[in-house]
Length: 222
Length: 268
Image (cartoon, rainbow over all chains, first blue to last red; front, top):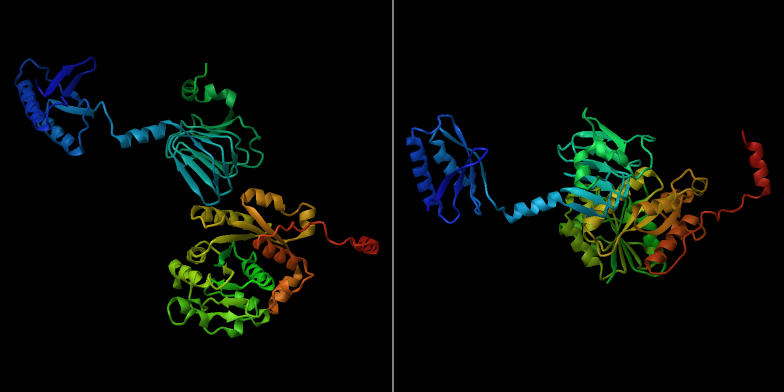
């Protein structure tokens, strides 16, 4: 059985690297395969982009480099991406961390910065000078007199919801608003978002579908 | 084995040193053996407030660096018959002259000898603060009913929560002006306590006599009738585990009929 197989798909070509074969074997077979293709006069002349699939094997950076180098010797081919069916536990944990809604119930005091990954359901208190910062959305049910930052560092599609009247600042990605007295009402339904003009603005929960249809679909709105 | 309590605030000028001197004196008056440690190196005041400034021979830096033994550096307050001692700060150097481990070693050496070791923390949250907190078992966070002091107290409570001591920090609200608090122009006691979310240890009313007595090198607690003195005495009793109700804001004496009439004429 060949350790490196070329497979045509609707979108182009996949180069499948069998997980059962050793990498040295793969290199030998891949070289043979590429040599054969080079010799094949009927093959199309334009450059072919390959998606390398490594099945249930994760290649190290060094191994990837070896494959890239070999393919690089044949100008007709170039590697588009290298993907595997599996991921490392560290990556999986990070993904889980990023995709989950995290419950946070603590007092964030003056001078304390709390950094989170993913969406945060905040039930605690933020004092003046305290900051809650996350890569995802913030759903706040707590008492906020400090700073809330969603979509850190640069995701403007994220939202901050909850009573923001007493907050010092609301930040989403790089946009921020200094909450002036009287700017907001004491409503748990406030939604802060970044509009099409890249300006942070406020809306109400019932406008969520219009503000951010993606999130609305995700949470199962009809 | 005694207990080491650090008296801190973050902000300067809220009355840490006055509080240290008065709580220490109040505990000594209750018959406890107390050692006051001044960690405000370079800007020492505790000795002045206690009227012991001319008795200093060695200081805490001398002890830490081995130039003097601990008992040599301790200054005895003769008014309290072997109950109150002061370990003075150095005046000719700065906060970086000490390391947290050195302070902890000194506190640990003092604890078996005394019922209370009160550590007067310098303002700020830098090296001096770290030094002061290093050896402590408990903390008293002093604030005044001003937004700036409360913010700084919040910061300090946050820092203390990150590096927890044996006991949770307790709050002391200093310099309360009864009239301002009564008419709502000053932050409320409940508001401050609720905001900071730590147990209230005591409240101290603002009183001119605190300044005059401190200038004379005699802590206000010595004057039994003074309201500020009562506040400090109550704090000392609470530290000892007694249940003492908070002093009332309203118990200011009724100005009286004639006083009110004369006020009425003075208006405008």
